[in-house]
Amino acid sequence: VDDSQRKKNKRKEWLEWYSASKKSKEKDF
Image: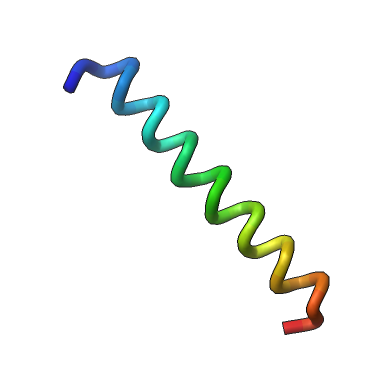
């Protein structure tokens, strides 16, 4: 895996985590 692909995956993971944490905050979790 080249470096740009790795960065894309990192960003995807971060976005997934970010949206998940936002959802749980909205539920006052």
